[in-house]
Length: 432
Image (cartoon, rainbow, N blue to C red; front, side, top):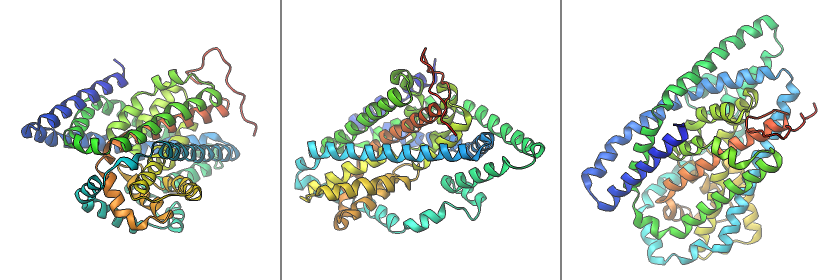
């Protein structure tokens, strides 16, 4: 049985068990899932512990194997343009659906006040976190690590990626004998990481069951019903982006069959749905890109860690809908100029969103402030906080799907033949 089938079975079984616990209100059953949740957390910790050695080894070997620094710059430039473009497209989809459906117009004042009261405390904590977040200048300076070891210890991937790329580029110009010694060492780390990932993933179906059951058991369907239209607009937007925008890129730019691609990578979005973390999913994402899609290590090791850090299409789309939802609830009319600001701010803010659960709430505060809704930040966050967990799971699945789509697109533009290729010839390699 394939991995994605096992994960899907665990996910569905967990959802059913959690729904039964929630619907019946049997407290011992709900407590049981709560008690089992640490087992799921332990699994996430296991897979997360592989991220740093895998990213460093894979990215360093991939960078050093490029040989030509111009090729590194070319791949990096195309990757950044791709990620920023698809994020802007995602925000535009979110705004378009919000203007068309107007999810905030049907929420009564009583429901609004009840939600604000119920989640006001948690919203205040998020606002405090956002207030203490570094500014744009500090964020840019933070990409250059003063201590790469500290960045690794704190799972701060962007500065670690910057250092590893620089170090890998330096390896390409040292004496061949010493270069090979370094690469052999990191090849061994990369191979051992892959073996360890395979071992850990044997536990994935059971961990997924526990994680999903705990979420559904404690979710509260009365809350989902109150925010049903908002939730459906976000989900519809995410599905349009995942199966519309990405499918067009796969068909016309990567020249691949989208249905075959989605089937091959299915385990990755399912796993991301369960963990709500692009970082925790990264080892499986890299393995799938190389073994199921056929992307080379030099492309996958560069594009995917970067994507887990800066590619937050799902998060940006959700922020666009959330801003419009909150504005509509409070009767604020956002002009076309305001919505263009949302596109720009959500695109840029998503780059700084960490690949961890609920990071999008923090960056949403930045977007709200950008269009003059600062006075409604805490109450607005409280309105949507109750359904954030389930939406976070879905948008993380979209994020990792975008990462894999980008890796296939970049590989194709570099002239690589992929495992999904039919009789069609691969695109010609880009000229140096």
